[in-house]
Amino acid sequence: MRDNPSQRPRIEVPRTGPDYAGEALSLAGALTNVWLLVLIWADLPDQTPRQFFLSLGPDAWSGRWSAVIPIGIALTMYIGLTLLKRVPHAFNYPWPITEQNARIQYRLSRSMLTWLKAVIVWMFVAIVWSDARVAAGAAGTVSPYMIAGFLIAIHAILFGFIYRLYTFRHGDAGDRPASPGDI
Image 1: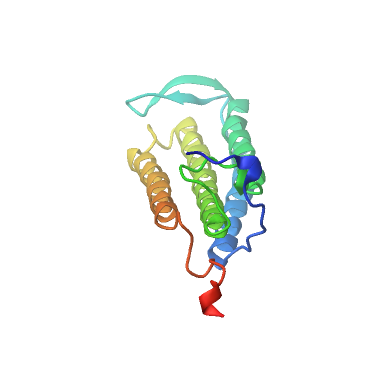
Image 2 (image 1 turned 90 degrees about the horizontal axis):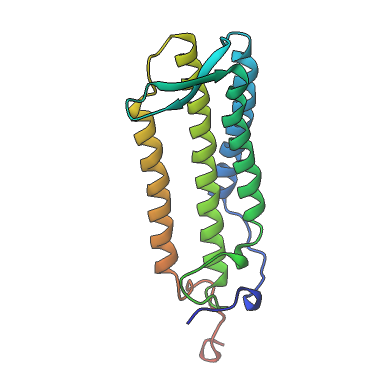
């Protein structure tokens, strides 16, 4: 039986040290994206790779302004995920959210988004850097190891946090209110 998100507890869950580290890493990635564009802009040729296919080599080219697109996507993801983390009570959970499990479920789901955001933003830094290297002729393709590494990181974060969410679906011992027998 699904619960109604409008009836879930709306509680403030404090951030943890790893949450602050993930936020700092995300912000550093977003700023690096912008800095990287400024740094490489003058050296970008008139045509830059727009699309890579299975060969990982470019199969479509466009003007230098296309280098702004991945940075725009990264910044949109950064802002969107930052805003989304503010409403963990509205997320889609596969089990009911109660007073007993809300604190741990909200904390874990917010942390999951923090670390996904960090990996995604840095993935776009790598994409911009790779595109610039291919455009300048310094590389012929995008590294398949880079792509595989980011896919593995994203899936590891998802599976790890989903497992923890499942493990604490009934709540955390530290989050449960004291029972009358504990007084």
